[in-house]
Amino acid sequence: MELDAGRKLGQALANIRRNLKAIMTSALNDIAASIRTIPDYPKPGVQFRDITTLLGNARAFRRTIDELVQPWAGAKVDQVAGIEARGFIIGGAVAHQLSAGFVPIRKKGKLPFDTVSMSYALEYGTDEMEMHVDAVGKGDRVILVDDLIATGGTAEGAVKLLRQRGAIVEAACFIIDLPELGGAAKLRALDVPVRTLVSFEGH
Ligand code: AMP
Image 1 (tube, rainbow, N blue to C red):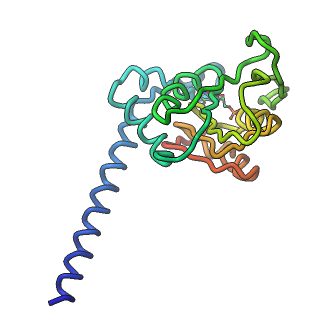
Image 2 (tube, rainbow, N blue to C red):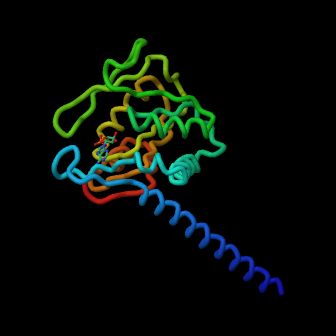
Image 3 (cartoon, protein in one colour):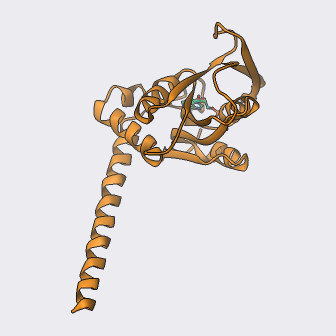
């Protein structure tokens, strides 16, 4: 009798798990389908992953934010740092959901107060990003957000900038991963847990 009840409970739990997985897969498929790909933009060979179509789709936008914040529900997050410019849109929504502050990481020369800066690798050459000197405090728990991770040069620069000011980078979150370019692996090698929702082949 007890064995029977145990088996039934086990089966019910397995069913729930299967259903949850199917719901999650369908949500992630919806998110992937809402992203527009522009071939050869801004230059030949690049498949530009355009998230304006995701942002304009209320259901996909909501699901994206829900998925990104899900691991942090109930966790203590002080700040969400977003990388200019698409990271501001995603990061602002994530910060709101987590009741956290928002920190903009911007291109050089855009922030009005005293800044700290970090150079980072581009495909050809380097660039600089900046953050207000008082944007994060020592020991602040920060989640880094951008729309997409490719080579990881931009996110790596942002992690270094945050750590330089004493923040703890709890994780880096992106909607899109381009795994062939190795960015997520680069961040994990810096001991930053990485969360991405969908991945695309190529550049
Ligand atoms: P990376 O530093 O190589 O990881 O590049 C990441 C940054 O460049 C992000 O801010 C992305 O928005 C942008 N980016 C790089 N590749 C693409 C792409 N194929 N489609 C859209 N944005 C991209």
